[in-house]
Image 1 (cartoon, rainbow, N blue to C red):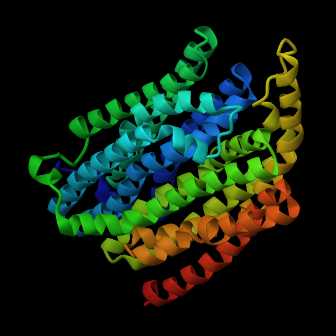
Image 2: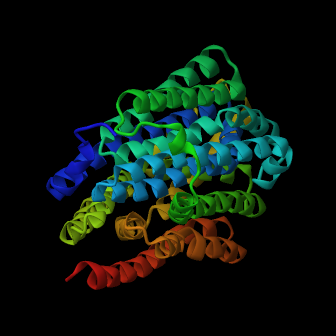
Length: 459
């Protein structure tokens, strides 16, 4: 361990200052990363066509899930690491970090190989039909070559934040996003490589992020990897896995949800409805970036202070995080409700030189998507309670309630609603399922969070 630990400030500085210090860089990083996804979608939509958006949308579940291996190990392990740092147990923190690296590399590597072996089956399973299957396969193969780097980046980013160095975590997200946007322009627009260009631009962005993460842990980190640290220890693996399962289950549920949505939209609609969801899913991450940033900033603060038994500071971090993220969510809701048409039009080319079929597809997409966007964001002002509540249990190491609350929206409510409502209301039933799930999951999470705070954090 390096001397002069920045992580100690998590237990001493004012909560609101800590939250701003953690959340602003996290928000900026998420903003740039989501802008990357937005611009990627805009480029393929405008320069390749609307079916290219459908192609990327069906590829996302598998790449998202494998990348989420690193995110899960990163968040779960960093909860253990934050509490170890809070207790002053530097030796355990180092072993946790080493085991995170090994677990991420092995698990993501195996899944990447299997994903390439079964690529044809997986693409069809994810909802691709013959109209855009080849586009999806082209993008999928190239992205999968670099997916292990993405998983390691997702893991490393959360460790950086757990050390109390959020600016470096922000840089780790910004650099590849900027690189991907630049390479998209070069490879798709200038060299006209089509979906191959989109795939290689994404691969290069993973490599840039990985290079930065490696540099940080060599030059700037408090943690120094040793051969002994990367050897898997059963007790540490069990502790990491218990908490990582929360994030992994949540991300796996998102992947299952995306697969289900793609297939339901194909059955009750068509490929352009899949493209509509592709636009909406990007907007979900992009528009909510400040709310997600507050949530990311909250995790190390709550974990460190819980480990240090500073329960009043934990309560304060919960209240402050919900207040800030709730106000931000309200602002986002207002913007989406007022400007849905303008937002969707960004993704669609108005070039009159396009062929008649593409122009017709663009017109249909512009007609359908704004209404769907409004419905999906209809309950946004209340989501802060659900996000912070589920994250609190993960931050303090209570894996089971964290898992169950993390699954309330997508797993317990949204998936059943999407299976049921379209049977009666068609594609509209898909979109209205989102706000209903938000309301129900917020009620459940709010109840259990309040009960836990009164039982554990109030003397």
